[in-house]
Figure 1 (cartoon, helix red, strand yellow):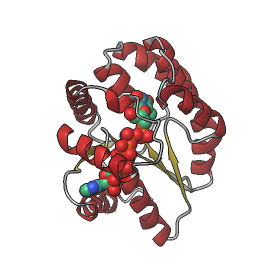
Figure 2: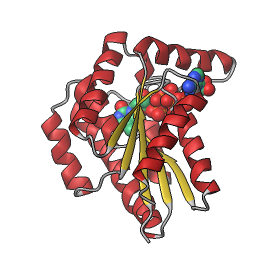
Figure 3: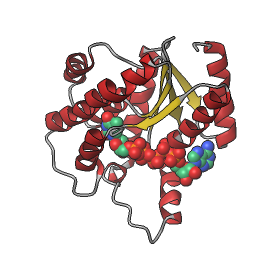
Length: 215
Ligand code: T5A
């Protein structure tokens, strides 16, 4: 039996990582093998590309070069980790995937959406998630959570801050971009109100998983 590919999407501090862990526990309790992964990253090669993209002073890429790097990492991630795990019957949960490139590089930075879709077709050849949860939260709330998290970790060096340095209007464009993606893909993407407590957010996700009943 083929497995399942679930992605979590949303802006900064929406709670994707927190909910990825909860979905993992949910499927493990049901007796499934689960692979938890993230983008950019997920394989040793793609993690190297992540370092080029998201760390402070990670590079001053042209929009095309940046987009190609995200998809280069994604293509390896899909071919060497995600597809084999699904073929083995595992549940794969990825913290971000292609929707993030469309939202950040496309809607956020204004890189041509049709070019992003062409690169997606060349590199992924139609491969996409079975289910996506878009964690939607007002920009201020998400950024505050992100900041609180950093303050808690004060004293520890945090270099993965390049994208969080963007202004609020950028984050608003991101939010609207993600919501547009959801509207265009109603069968795949479920929008979740992520401004509630982590447990309440997971209850919404759990209900959607039960209704979908794909595995
Ligand atoms: N990027 C990525 C692109 O530009 N293009 C792409 O194609 C891809 C794939 C790295 C960066 O790369 C960019 C986007 C990013 O800027 P990332 O590593 O996913 O992406 O980084 P972030 O999105 O910045 O991850 P965050 O950790 O900020 O956000 P999460 O994962 O959404 O949130 P999480 O779960 O870590 O929670 C953040 C804090 O909030 C608390 C948590 O305890 C934590 O302290 N929290 C809650 N608090 C209250 N209520 C809740 N419901 C909460 N849920 C979590």
